[in-house]
Length: 85
Image 1 (cartoon, one colour):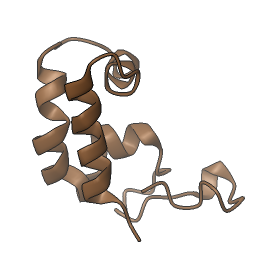
Image 2 (spheres, helix red, strand yellow):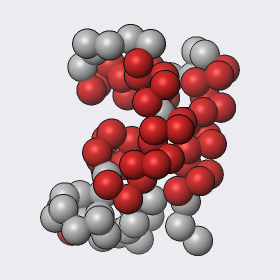
Image 3 (tube, helix red, strand yellow):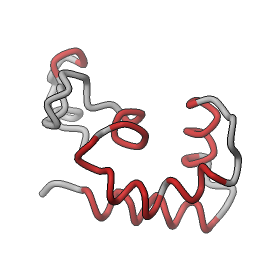
């Protein structure tokens, strides 16, 4: 997840391995990447369904701000399940 983030690779060149020719951003990983569809359906989609109609920015805040312990745990489980070693 987020290849090149700490390797001084320019942002525009941090392309996701999914082949969609897009930067592997946090938004892409959490909401769009086909590589993580199954994990997203398990850990992220149930959170997003609680507040339909929100913008991507609002959903990102909902997932990452940490005001809800269950949301935080689900996001952590998502990233633990998709991390590349």
